[in-house]
Length: 237
Image 1 (tube, rainbow, N blue to C red):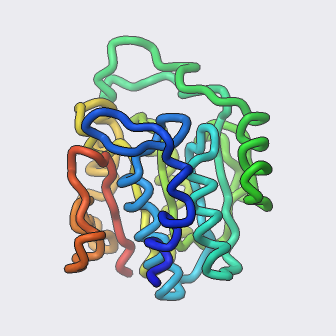
Image 2 (cartoon, rainbow, N blue to C red; image 1 turned 90 degrees about the vertical axis):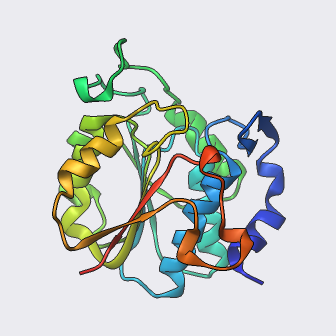
């Protein structure tokens, strides 16, 4: 059976809540089942194609996506390592391009202790954890090569900080999934603005989209755009 389908059959209890119009969501309410389907589908693509490098997650909150990623890596018997980065103190200050009237600093915080407990309770160790804002991450705290990256930093400057850290480490064929790239409610526009600016006329990067995953005819890979917020980029050279 397809590993991603198998994951959802085995772990459907990880999506105990429902939000009107969004469908099943994780216990912390942060991710819809379709958003996890997008992440895991492209992670599985990377694993199937033996793309060189490890896996990174920038912005992990309480760990629901880390758990999903780690479970899929383990089910594939892959030796890829998972590296996660989060301030565990909430968001930094926002930029004008985020189009948010209030100061975001400190909002959407989840503690490092909560994260570690959730990882332990789901038997998902080991995970390499770095605490700090993205701009402050040191070079030796990143894997040498990256095959898959999931970004959930919400804000314009955080997106640029993330891209500056990982650009030269993404390998040919690797994938980046950006959360809140095209949020159905229109919030957090800074992520897409930063990506558009950063990747302007870059022929090494291809924007994939977010509704027909892998351009596959299997209906499993179609997701309703009203239930996802992500944008997917592939590194082609």
